Amino acid sequence: MPTAKPPEEATTLDALRRAAASCTGCDLYKRATQTVFGEGNPRASIMLIGEQPGHEEDLAGRPFVGPAGRLLDKALVQAGLDRRHVYITNIVKHFKWKEKEGGKRRIHEKPGRGEIEACRPWFDKELWLVQPEVLVCLGATAAAAILGPAVRVGTARGRALSSPQGIRTFVTVHPSAILRIPEDAERAAEMGRFVADLRRASSRSGKAARPSSPSRRPGSGSSKGAPAR
Ligand code: URA
Image (cartoon, rainbow, N blue to C red; front, side, top):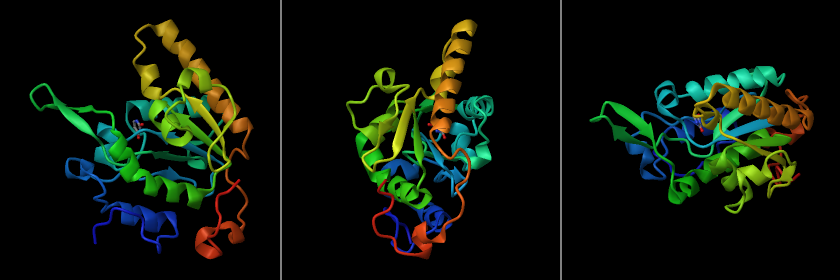
């Protein structure tokens, strides 16, 4: 059955992913190929949060596998992080796009507040299930969704902030912003700052997977109160 909200019985990431596949909570599903749910280590200490899937992600059904994702992968390696050990997701899980060049190209269009709000229950439940120690907001849309609309990447960057759930939160640029820098030296410098941001976030977390503790898992015990840290 199509859903616009996570069903209560979806108490694992796999169940949540399956339920999200038929989400009709806003109109974006009508023009997107598929829902692009988060992926990675379900016990990750670090959750990286982007805006929404792009063209390649929409086709592949996986987050951050296009040009921005390839840059992110390089940065993760340089920061000493393994993509398989973190959890990567987006605030909005359908690709919003407009046509360019007579319909030949699909161009990213920023999600609106209504779409972000409609998608929010999926992210909230994802967060509740993974229970990361550290959040990394990639760009302004993720930062505003987590920390509120007043947050600015430029001023929030480099500081350990706290999400409303009490999770340590870092803000950095979106990898696509680095790709858009035309000048090589400037782009390389920004990449260096991005890697430093990821390294800082990683140093404030357990880095990889946390040891399994079944009593903390919402699907295997009491679901009350998580993740209130
Ligand atoms: N940009 C994002 O914010 N997320 C993706 O998954 C890909 C590009």
